Image 1: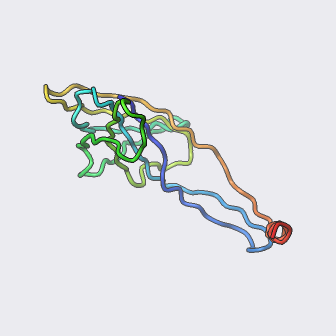
Image 2: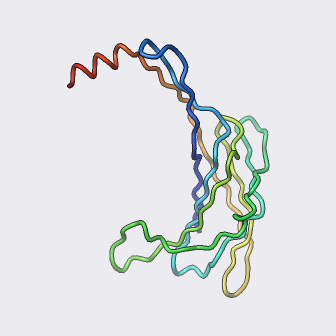
Image 3: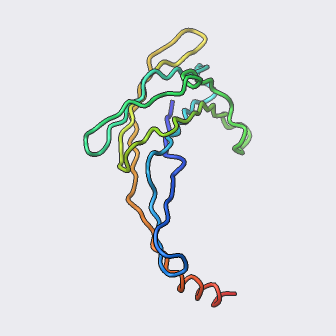
Length: 152
């Protein structure tokens, strides 16, 4: 079982004077996306997520609210990705938690739940580190116009 998590829906804010100088930053809250991956030989049918805890780089933490319709996520074959013949099919279960990330910091996410199979259930837990880089961009309007006319 493999868990991938990433921050989605980054909100950008633009400051400054248009066409003169401006800079952009992003602002929380961010949406947190999860993708659980299993191979077709794994006997799992679904994952039941019971608890998601975020611990920020500064030591504070938050419990993530899981959408009611996403506590049980069934595994489905990955049909979007091309794979060579004979390679095992990957199964995915994915969902998002809107506005889960309240701070613009790197964090650790703990996921607790159960894996369902035809024979029963077994506990599941995983910890994933997510790194958020502090980025902002500076745009100088006259330079962008100069480059546009230079290469047109």
